[in-house]
Length: 214
Image (cartoon, rainbow, N blue to C red; front, side, top):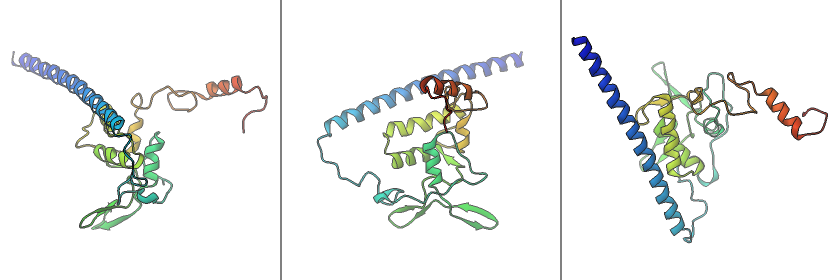
């Protein structure tokens, strides 16, 4: 009897948790849409106000005054994803570490008295990145809307079953099948889709030349 009651209790907790997840997800999307609508209205109202050129990126951040961290190609063991925008931030990321007591510590910012100097955009190895950190660096690097910059990392965390506020990810985690990556491309091969024949047929249908592309 007690086992049956325990099963019923666990089932009830699961139902409550499922309902809470659905409601919180809907509330989050609605909040993002309202926030985006407010930003759109604000942009319309303020579109006639002159904007200062060269002040999109704040001082002390990568890209300020047109100065970006050096590009360094990924090395073996670095984590990369199918998203070129995230890969670019890691390729221009941190390649500076120190060893303390036989432990390697990666440093990608130096906190001074009144400012923070960023040595790179994302950690160069593409590992151990918090979802909240992604929100900030995407916003500062690409000047996307704040709603987009928070929605995408939150969506990544949801796909991976992790917490946006406390968990981390490696860039390669984003490529989990049927998450953001899915069988929709007809030009890129993947372990789940053979697209070479489709791409070749597409090329031939739009190019009457008998010679293959070089």
